[in-house]
Amino acid sequence: MFDIHDFLLRARLDAVSLDAWIKAGWLAPQQAAPEHPFSELDLARVCLIRDLREGMGVNDEGIAIVLDLLDQLHGFRQALHRVSSALQGLPAPLQQEILARLRGGQEEVVRHSGEEPLSGVD
Image (cartoon, rainbow, N blue to C red; front, top):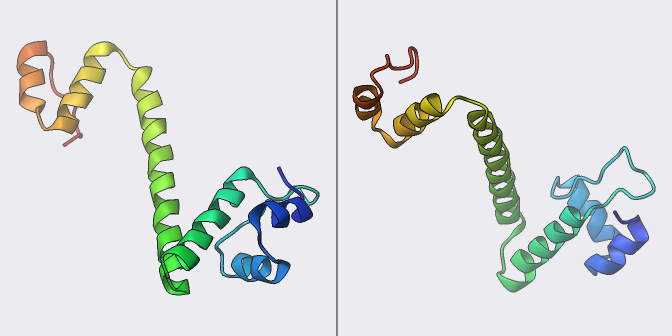
């Protein structure tokens, strides 16, 4: 975690730009940690924003879209991780049936397991 001074130095960013990027919603420092509101993730985001702007010539609208898509992707990865963890706690036959359905092979699992398919899951 970084305080604002360390963050600005590491990010090679001025306070005016930082304020503008926060107002644009590109960065969201932790409000609950007033002494050290910035994380390594915030620093990585600043580097990405700088690369998009300076290295690739992406305009502000484009940066907002890229960051929104990255945030969505991160959310999907977290959800997938939760689903995977939940699957790990299920009995093996049920895990196999769910995985087969995800792959599109529902009929094969029912034939081999001799059990009824899950109801309500299509």
